Length: 347
Image (cartoon, rainbow, N blue to C red; front, side):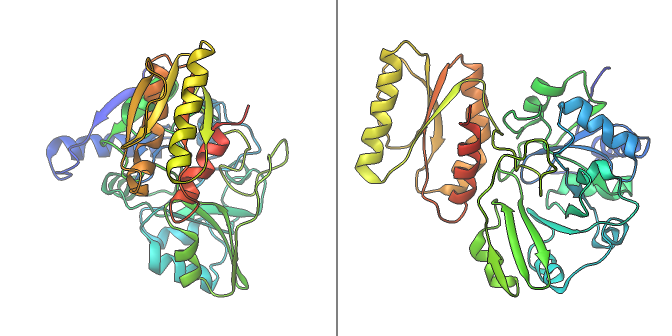
């Protein structure tokens, strides 16, 4: 299969070139094909969510196991009635607060949604992305679009069109290149019920923000490996988002964290590893010959999130056999960064 590269001018979606690229990508989706496209979180690999054969092409391209459900993306709130059988009041409140945006709601699925989308479960994940290219594509296509992250299963998520091509070139119909993803980590996934909400995957929309809107209790249960049983939501597998290199995580605070980071890097280099560093500003290198990815300001969690997957991919490409990464504090979007790093470090 030849994968088309369709280019969008992000600052000018009304240009002739942008309109042509979006129209061609939408036609591929309506025809049962697969298109990778940018969202504000990461790139997604899309197919018509109401076409079981099209959804199957996502699983085949990603080599995604059948137990892992996929999220359905909407261009308009009115599309929700095509994929959800009912909408609790808590869901309406969260939609009002965070849609379009990086929030996925788990809702009772409409009978028209193929079981492949939900891994046989009775609840479907739905969101309306905020990225202008994603919205333009979804509205032009006119169908709900199932779209997990556009990478091979278990690998580091793609935040640029080049990352998508690294994993999926020749395996999908098209890549709609809309530049770099804004947030860099996947959406928050919330199971929404009248009595309260359960956060299955932390993301850009934080626990504190959900609690401010969702009526009733809001909990975040510990995750377990989905194994062969259907996962409650996407991203629940124990090993996920992983680079090829081993990932060594360093936790702590202040000077102790910095000293521990340098010590781990030095030890790995002395043991013979090609060391890669996810290096925030102000952190010591530790390993003199290390490959360096300038991660960003340590006190700017949004920047760290946006550059996380790009950094892991860059260090893989640079030949690192072990990557050392400090862990941000478990607050705000730092919770999502820690979640991705812990999953990426599993062996």
